[in-house]
Length: 349
Image (tube, helix red, strand yellow):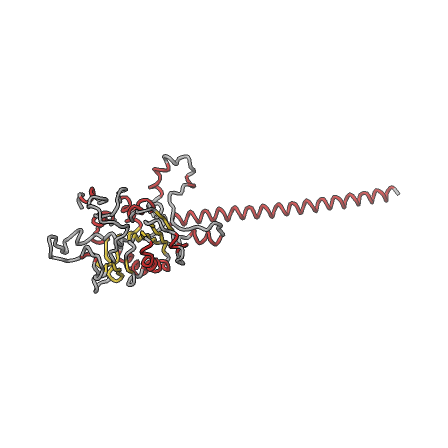
């Protein structure tokens, strides 16, 4: 009898040990699976961060070493790999998914359109923006009349960035909100006025010409029927695709093939300039902090042509606009020294 009891006891103990062993094996398997999952998550996160850094380095317009002077000073307490010196103007969703991260990891909007906009010119601005959005532009509106809500009814309004400041001009907005480190992800910056007719303008074809000719600073030609034309250089040449200079033997300034600067070559007017990334980096520093109306600015932009202004600055004739010459902000024109580039106007060109 004792042997039978002993056998039953051994059998019961063996069964209990087997159950415990099975549970432990399942626990080990579960832990192994969890460790594998965690390792996979860490790997994917690290890989994503690596690809993101690699992509940013690829599209970064400026060498990291240029920012090292800041890193070695006020930012020296930060780990080197965590420093992010630049930003962009892309809208981000409140809740990101893997697909949205992938979308915004690649800079989908590589060009920027910035326009000072008053509600009285809503229809004209609407026509301009509708030309640019299909070509993958980021759009920012500077509301100088402070009225943002009146634009909400436009179907593209939520895709644009709206900045409002009462009675401020384009150059005031540009100096404060288009810092080179913020817009460095964009290949070209269109800093346009709101009173331009774009019926004969196509952004894609325009940029194709700009890139093929290597223009660092450019503008669309002005239709001869425009209300305001200040310089012959910017008038559309009907038989040309683009031009770099104008010839005119009349007047006090003779424009010939030997002319090296304004008003014959190497400048654009202030109503519709287009800057390459490098040119805007220079132009932003050229803009004085107290600049208001920008008179004289156009004649000095050649400093930022990244080389020979007679070659790197051009007017695109095949894609032209109508300058309507509408006075905005109200009031009369101030005296010339109110907001002019007085120091630059006296500088040697």
